[in-house]
Length: 338
Image: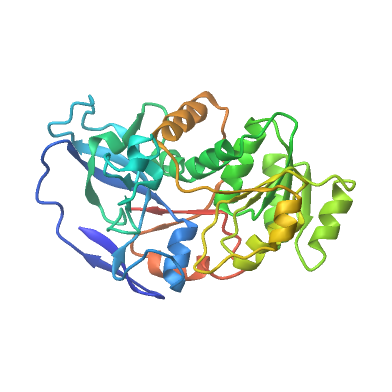
């Protein structure tokens, strides 16, 4: 079967591998139809993804079709379309027992810690498949991305009418924007890319779009009439940006780091204490996020129509991917058709 392997930083290969031998227990055999391309894939390609080893089959944003439900007790049938929850957790550690499998002590994420879905057929635990009778595999491949934003917004505990700043308008930033809006936030976004800011204003009706730069703090203050946001999400995965988030937030506010970076993050402790800030990390999402998002997409509360701007088949993927990682590519969300 066709398989795409990231052999080392900067080197992708389309090759042939053997399909799974069979399935047992609660595993389900699925055909991968759509694979969303994530910032994690870009970081891995550039050699900047934490917890990553090469070679690796990428792909954790997956829309799949069930081939063989095996002995699964979930009621799945051949032909069902599903989103894959790519977080394989132990179920027994302190985090899992507390209902936080997203930060399991031995968590393995498909396409990151173990081989993922950039191949035609894979086996997946039945409990990690979330079925929809209405959504396409393209839409189902976007559920995991949206889950990151859903969980981050839940972590922040946004109140209706609260002023929120999202720093970074890539796909994960868009997912944060989507759920911050559903929570009733008054939303501002900050990014270096004017095209992404335009996209946010045009397709997501974001009230304030602010161009980042050396005077970003002054621009934010001017745009918000000197009333700082009480919640700041940094979704950049850039250490300088993450450390700069402290200059935007109001007294007593919250900062949520959604992006991850292979670096140390520092801040000035006297200011942190003086302002009595809350600093939160947000990792992955939880099973209930997948269910909530699929229901919201099916009802029309979330429209992913504008998201997918680029796509490629398997044979052209290596060339396409090398273009997508270039600055100014215009990619919002790219999808691989397996």
